Every structure is written in structure tokens, then in C-alpha cells.
Length: 139
Ligand code: AMP
Image (cartoon, rainbow, N blue to C red; front, side, top):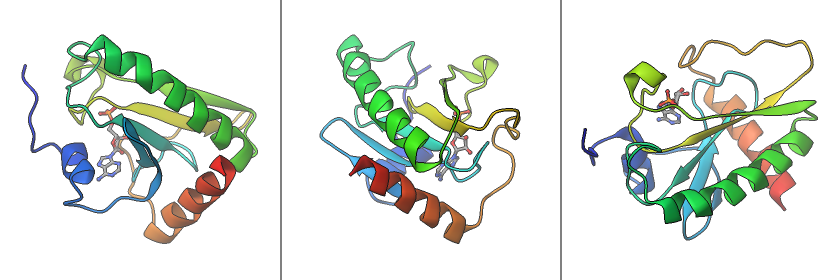
């Protein structure tokens, strides 16, 4: 399977569609997932194009995990989380629905199950408030 430049995250990276962005550097952006599986669910997306971990340049993979860590640490503080779930899916059989490599960073509260993957669209104001909390925790 080849990379499709028309995927929704590529459009966000090109600024063609909006996102609730919380972080950007030379290698990646982080924005809120519009169908969060828990409040504060964020996505870390490398700027370099690849479908997923199967076709990614190892150099891109090496750069992305420290960014995932940075977001995870900030997320735990921002949402007073007991833990963080990091998820990453590859190809439809692996659960992937958007075909540009990304990592889910989800704050977790003890005993609270995750909501459905790609379930319900969150209100824009809630996403904006959570983006602001995460941004503040990133400093
Ligand atoms: P995956 O199954 O790992 O490919 O997950 C894709 C994720 O992207 C899902 O959790 C969706 O809720 C999320 N998503 C889809 N469209 C958008 C969008 N425009 N902005 C932010 N997140 C999105």
C-alpha cells in the first residue's frame, strides 16, 4: 500500500483543515483527537509522510518517541491522570483508520474504561479547553 497525500492528517499538516493543535516542532505536531476515547486524548503525528510504522523511515521513528514521551508526561499532569495509554495502529486489520503514521496519547483514570475508537465527535469547545490544558502543561 502506498502513502495517500489526501489523507486527513496530511491535510491538517498542510494547514488545509483545522485542528486543535497543542505542540509543533520541526519533526511533528500534536493535536486533539476529535473523537476522544477519554478526555484529553491527543495524537502525535510526524511531519514526514508514511502510512504507519511498517513503511516509516527508522530515523523518523527514532525522533517521534521522545515527542510522544513529552506529550505523555504533560498529559498526565494536565488531566490529573493515573496513567497514560499510548496506542498506534497499522493497516485496517491492525485497527488503523487514518493512513498517516500517528500515536494516540490518552490520559487514563483508575477504573474508567476507554470509550470506543473513532466513536463520538466531541464538542469543539471541549476540545479547545483540553488543548489549552495540555498546552499549558507543556509550558
Ligand atoms: P487510527 O485508527 O489509529 O488511524 O485513528 C485515527 C484517529 O484519528 C481516530 O481516533 C479518530 O478519532 C481521529 N481523527 C479522525 N479525523 C480527525 C481529525 N480531523 N482531527 C483529529 N482527529 C481525527
